[in-house]
Image (cartoon, rainbow, N blue to C red; front, top):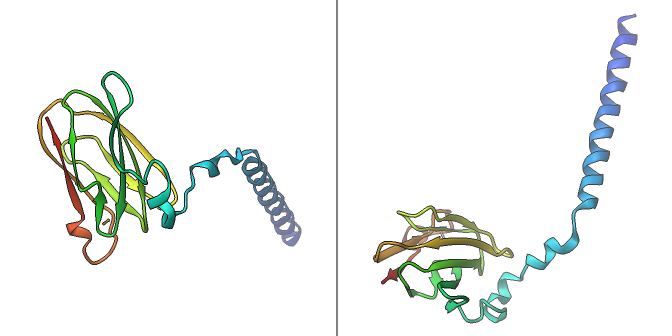
Length: 152
Ligand code: CUA
């Protein structure tokens, strides 16, 4: 009798498992293929717009886009001047491995994954030098991976 109970439980578990598997497969099938538009070949970042010309460009009255790439072990562009009080949309990707993108003193803290484009917006209201640093271990010189932006 005990065997029958265990068999029933076992079969029920199997059906629950198959059900979960079916639902997740269905959910994955529903995901739009447009996800792939955000993928880019890390080896071709140098020649892929907008990353072929990293830097700051004005996109509105008081908005700018800061296009940057992370690589082992630094960022491009090397130094950037940011207008005080403007909204800066950072657009960042990696040319090789996973890096970090943290600006201490702000809420900016992103993981930069090769093949993906990361976005964050920020308005700098205090002038001065800000460090951008890598907070994801990316190799021997990881702790030296940083750059500076100057807000003025
Ligand atoms: Cu890049 Cu750590």
